Length: 331
Image 1 (tube, rainbow, N blue to C red):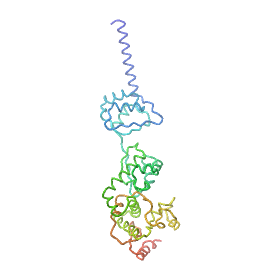
Image 2 (cartoon, one colour):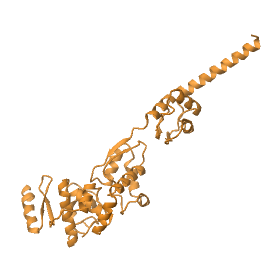
Image 3 (cartoon, rainbow, N blue to C red):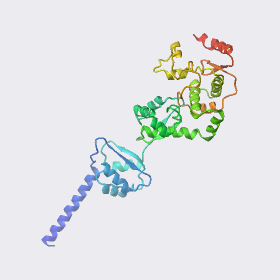
Image 4 (cartoon, rainbow, N blue to C red):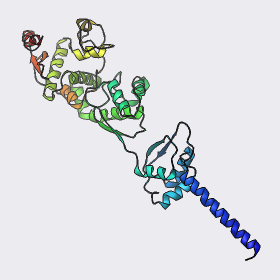
């Protein structure tokens, strides 16, 4: 081989080594992410080429080509899972591949019956999803309520109690919309028909169901409690429900006072007759069904037996005797 040939071979060798070195550097050196991090969305059916392009554009990987080659070489090019991925720190290509192949572990959140919107916001924040402020702000946005199909003047009552699974990157809007959608799914056609038969709007049903939910935790008592309130409404009697008074107070210290019972708020059912303007909590399906199918009862009163159950009475003298028996003797 002549001198020129040896020089050409040497240059090719240097070029190959340089390319290998650059590839190794790209594979093992994490890129520089923006200070705010990066979010990359992978949709169902996206190919490895499109995924590589998005990762490179977002600054998650240095080279779309090298990511694609590495994915195919490692056999993970068809194992990349759809989802919304948030990258807060620079990551090597191998780690990015491993994360996309593993997919996103959803965050599970269980909303019990009877929570208020603000309590749901606390629950969401505690699971690291959206902040309490973001949830509360959106809950108070009239345009959001209309767009989400909330059938009342406020979000309270329409965050359906259930167990949900959200992506870690889910925002307040997605979370609330999912809970509202679940409400509409469960309050289906038959329940709408039953409400219409009773002459009630959806908001009226949910409002009374929220009161029933807060008044008793015993499943067998819900239809009886609903019957008491339905009987009172028919007679034009005030509902006189302590939970509604508490909901209307700007701050509640734990004990209702006589002054609280006399405070004029839209939710004080000792002062205002009829239903309050909206729900006082988010009721479960059992409370809603109790309102739609209350027990056959003449009861107009009930009082706690101090064991989680209640004594129901049809007349005021009967009720006064029950109060004397279960309440005053405890003092």
